[in-house]
Length: 225
Image 1 (spheres, rainbow, N blue to C red):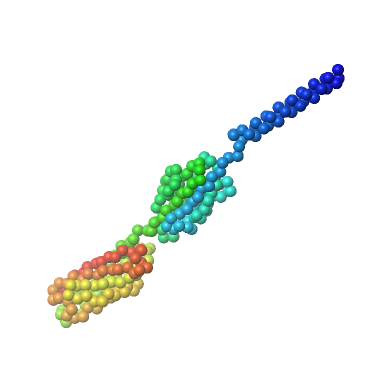
Image 2: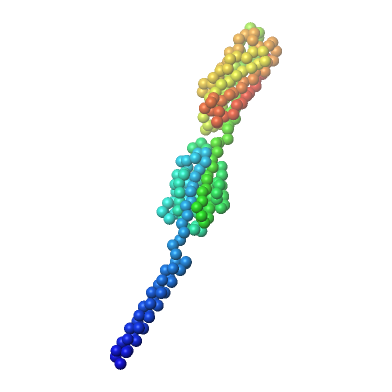
């Protein structure tokens, strides 16, 4: 009897062990417990093509919360990522995002469900039109007097002093083009060079090659009699 009872108990124990092993196998093979799928999010920039620092929330699978373009992040599927670009990069200003699920000014929100690329695009700042002024001395001349003309080209407060050249014309007389020095240039018009009447003096500023990306050309007019 004892032998039969022991045999039954052993069979029961083996059967129970098999059930436990089977349950464990099913648990580990369940899709709900499978490893999450990770995707790569590439963050890049345009104009400039590199060197832009961009922040990311939440931290990615490698604990990264920012990077400098171009860089990559790793996120599990269905993660919503918020990227924030700076309003300016050097002298360029932020223009737009592409590749995002949604955009709000400098912020890009992207839901990661596949490998993806987003791009922050920048643009040159708008050109500035400086102010030109023309002052003659004396205000009135005779046919025997020369005329001194002062032309100043000024930018808005906080912007660099414009560099470049100024041309002056009066219809009858046009002196050689002169180069600005600290935003100012002087012309001396010899006696007898202007018409014996009211003269319109037009000064035209042309930015230097270096300033052409910053300043527009401009002109100013003064009357002299």
